[in-house]
Image (cartoon, rainbow, N blue to C red; front, side, top):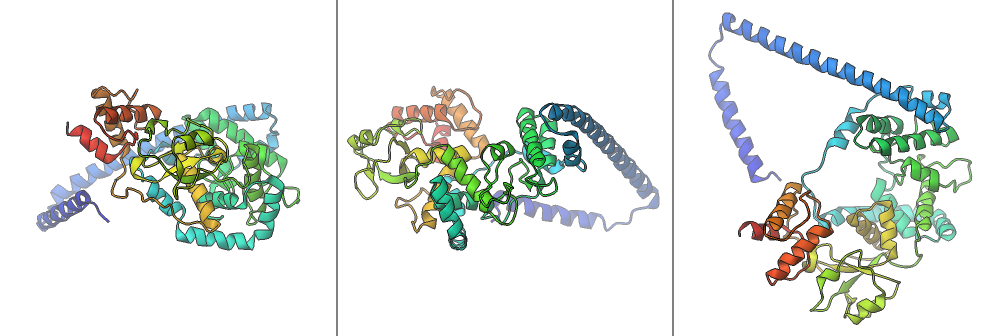
Length: 432
């Protein structure tokens, strides 16, 4: 749906185009037209020449970078023939540069993200895939002691069960990121990792494809993670995460989660009910306490049962006091080792539960609350600081400092101090 501002812009465009059409019905003399055309052509030619010159300069710089990097790669143990074959047809990928330089202004609310990540179609497809691979998944679970449902959920989240694994040449993508320089050290390290994979013979340069940022295969391993954790589960002599057969990729994901301490049979988290007098300052992921501690405070499951003891837990309030609340356990943080975003870990956990027959959360999300754009988050931080509730900077990232500042403001104004950064909070602050 078009927003009102966009509709207004379109209508204005229609009006202006109508005026232009009427103005252009008058004949234009050849004496007037010719100089205009010549001027426009000259301008276009100059712009084209400038762009071509800049492009040529960029390609020359890239060639120089490649030669220097070749020396580093050889010193790291990469054979010259392997490097030269991998870089044979590599050029700068402008789409990678564009994607790496873009930063989304608008974000989605957690419930919107979960709606998509754990949609009915994704659950249905996941159950079908699970049935098709049930023998393989059972064997993987038996060897690595990682629940098959979470392996399936990560596969679903990363590539929609292998339906889209990315089509960017990994060497070209990482070389572009390394040359661009914003994350050069990271990209060059991953690039050397990718060359080591090629040298081991697990995949050819042509088949080594994935996301624009270098993640590869069914479950999107970065090259250095592949080198540490990838598995040859089907014993064919290759750790092949790129083929149509997802076996090695699924086993590699299980091995990764096992390495970071996955607890088989334990949940990522459980939906809970907080007591009426709960201090929301305690609801921080870093505030990990024994289950007994939370029980003593009156925390129970959403159905009123005693909080189950799966070890130490933290309280998560992803939408503040108005939305579902969770006790999260060790497995939640293990998922975050795969992708550090809280929303991602929730999505994997929730999808895994749905694949096993679970339903939606019991408490409702505050769906009338719209998401803050990045610029609005910056504005919120600035207004809070200006009112004496210092966020320690205004970068548009809502972290612990901003949560603390919001809580302090809420406490000072007799509100539930859940620290939630909302559009209604920003509106309240800007009206002061």
